[in-house]
Length: 342
Length: 296
Image (cartoon, rainbow over all chains, first blue to last red):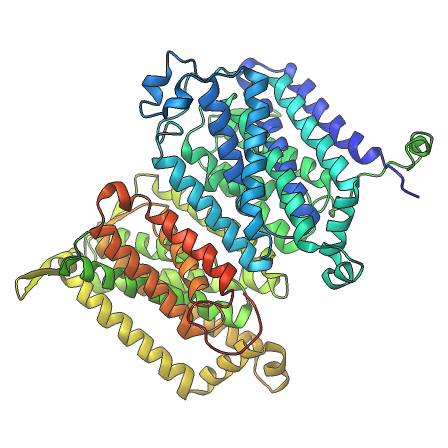
């Protein structure tokens, strides 16, 4: 009997909606932090789909975020501004244009296809080799995007991309990612992949193909990462270094701090680390808390997040949530669940 | 593409430096099964020590002493605070943890010294040129090759001829069996971490001669490339790892100078494609011809 634990998806969605609603209460300048947080939720949930379910490390997902950002960015810069930002753009891209939703869908598609193609050779690896190889993918993507001015702005920033990612679009994007991640994790594929994570040999013995399951998860998470990249480029002028090591670090930190093996952990981690990071960034410019005036030196945020990530890894390697999904007791989920039985 | 003697000297310089970094990373991996992503930040700390010493007007030898002291203290702290509690975790968790430590140290350097960095001037005389047979070669290239050779020779003697060296070799072959036979785990690991730190200090001295401007991301790129080189060479054994580090440094140094800019800018792409190919085709490493079955 298969039962859908709807609380596993409702909990994270409620958290995201609550964060978005909280964001409507603050000033416009502070709202950017909330929007940024929700985009990070989308990216971290994308990471979770692969890393959380497979237990294999990937340093390469920000490549797919970058490709998504490049896709959405190149297609939505107004044609009149393209020669200024991207003078060497290839001919077929010069006159193509997409609206907001199209650009996001294409960003997700490009991320997914790239992940699938990269995954075909790479999903044979695990452990340390997978870590190094995915890192190599990040380096290659960064190097190519930096110098290939035929497909993007090179070292320039994606300025004049329409800033359509407000609170609503970011929250919607994050919810889409959460629902996709939930459906994947509850599917036959997600269950098989988690079986290979828990016991490789036993999973093989019952006929699960580790390679195929990992490739499916890698592709799905590439889609979500690409979508996250599209959302990101519509939020702020993305530049090649803003989708590189720093973003890799902060998103991995979020996933690990929250608890890599659960969707709830990914969302909690993204929200918690983002809240801390944003608050510290504000405090670097001077703020007050409970009547205390706080003025932290610039760079404190990175240090605190670094210490937090190292501390969680050392003291509580399964993360804040213990890597478990949210299960509410006393809520009549069975009534919903019995209808959804397969 | 024409390769000049100058390019070859640059290649030898970078190859020697990377070989030492590879040994430093490989020694710790041998006993702890831990890839230290934060190795570059040890080098960075040493480089800042040199820069500060030259800013205070200290003589060169005092700067080098300070550099060693800082790097060794930081290595010991890293082993005590991070590596020890992480012992026994999966290699992937340890890699992420050292990734976090690397970022932490880099942010601390950013906070203390700013993003513009400081200039280490006390050793600039080594950056000048010697003219040998009509070819200009920077002194540091020759010094680096000699220093690297001496370090590797000392290390070979240490690993091959002393008791602690024997213990280290035993520990990196099979840690639990070695412990059962009386090898003291903490002593061997601390020793490996300290030697690895000493090598980081040597690397810091040589890299600051080559690039006197020390910024918080000093040696970060080098560490990434060396890690790739070590994996390509073969992480499980010291000699293949060192060869891998040397090869990738030599290739980067020669090609970086000899290729025209519009090609050399894609050097990282070629290097990392090669890394992926080696991982897929020869997961034990290019230079590892032993028959052990463990994969990286």
